[in-house]
Amino acid sequence: MSETARDDVRARVTAFLAEHDPATTEPLTFLRARYDAGLAWVSYPEGHGGLGLPQELQPEVDRLFARAGAPGNNVRANGIGLGMAAPTILAFGTEEQKRRFLRPLWTGEEIWCQLFSEPGAGSDLAAIATRAVRDGDGWVVNGQKVWTSGAHNSRWGILVARTNPDVPKHQGLTYFLCDMTDPGVEVRPLRQITGEAEFNEVFLTDVRVPDAHRLGAEGEGWRVANATLNNERVAIGSGGGVPRGGGMVGVVADTWRAHPERRTPELHDRLLTLWVEAEVARITGLRLRQKLKQGQPGPEGSAMKLTFARLNQRLSGLEVELLGEDGLRYSDWTFVRPDGVEFTGRDAGYRYLRAKGNSIEGGTSEILRNIVAERVLGLPSEPRVDKDIPWKELDK
Image (tube, rainbow, N blue to C red; front, side, top):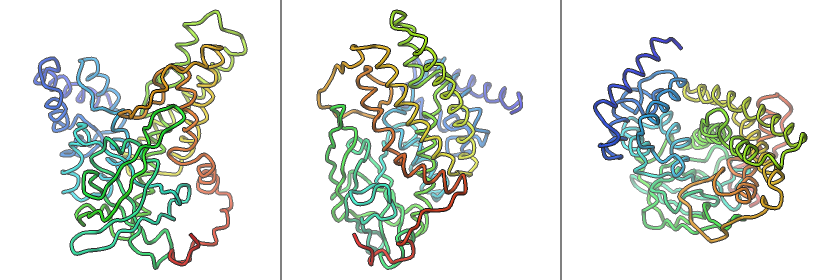
């Protein structure tokens, strides 16, 4: 990256801040103007929140805005929209879809959720049974989705449904953008071990989706969904682009500094080892996000997601050990419906319990190991006897 490009971006941010003072500009007005100036996602195309510049300039832009006290775009509440829906819409959407959805997504005006998993199709996503039947210039959708983070706060959902049961399961899927406020969409909470309900089950009953909200070609849903899943695994696995020493490793390091009386050489050695692993994962995540922005998603995101789950669980366990009996306390068992996912929030007891879900959400660790083995290491695939059988003939 040339210093000329970096200097140009800094000058753009400086000029923007001179015209839009964060202290006096209403937050939503500020975010809309930042998007229109191409300073939202600098690597996105001009006209869609970006400037067509390399992804590595984004942290510099974000740092300059944060230093100026600029409002954020609610990443915690809209992580699925920002990390999964936006890059998928950018890659597969029409120009009209990009204009309609990307700006309010980035500003946080519209929150997104993911309608993929079902009670009978979690790890085997291609086995989904939710049906979308063509009706005039739209589709009628019926089915059930589960483990839908943030559905209770979402305006839109990225939805995969079966449009052709007469072909093998991977071939008969289509990808849609579903309005969560439409008639027939019912959201019910799923209570977790932490006492809260960030997850939901979603029932779709005769929900009408216009064909204009189809993303990609009919029958190409598996291809589009895989792009979303690659983005998801990189987004989760890289911690959403946390800085050096951020995320769970930073939380545990702060706990270490605050409790010198609890330190032992063995705990110190484990903390340093995990710090090094977290830094390796962070740098790898930077490279993978750059590949995604260049339209080159790959299966390496599965390895990142695996690493994230393992590190988070080991770090949260180390923190509990460091705090002794205090680490076992969890201050709030009240049933709540949070605005977004918290991997590092609240107290140590919450973090330890919440980390248990890291090896399930975004693809189970068992399935991700298969992906790494087959698509990264080139090992023989597991036998799949149902791969070429029409979906309607499968045992369900």
